Image: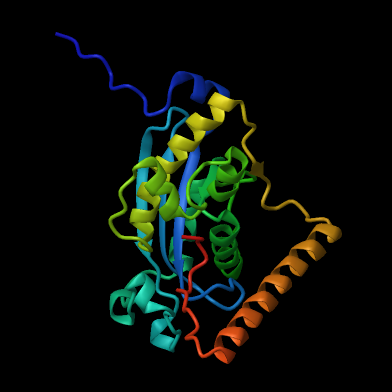
Length: 247
């Protein structure tokens, strides 16, 4: 008696149009600035061109809590100094991380955030991330005009019926992001979209840098204005968790 192999998660038309191998990843961090803040948790899942899982890997990362490094918003990621004690440093994980992403399309939700932190950690230990391809599922969802409430990971999970168990846990965020990616790739193939795969090491033109900085400054000024108006009107300012994942 013979058994037929299980069907691939992605239709053949999708894997034929987008013949990429992927490294889907997520990080939890002590804050928002990769120049000052550190990585606390990394999760990476490798997918083949058919969307099948090849390997799952994750690790906590000790950023130096024994030397007084603040783990940041514990109420968001739940990573206390006690949980991080005894975890390897990024220097000990740089080799496995590089091996997991090498030659693959790195996929993350709000990819510049996750990539920025991993690249900064790699630079600190004299390493690099050996890939020139990065795909952001936020950008892909915008290109597809996915009709969800917004492009946060939670909203996309709700739209596609992907249950989240532990939001802001890197392992679970990668698990659900794999499903979101599969849905998005199928939609992209159906409408004939070119995937917005970027080279993270490409030099950004000065004009584009200026535009980005102006948009960030305008956003910060708008937030301060709204906060000032709420304070003036006696409203309590709304607090937002410190995370960079647009969730």
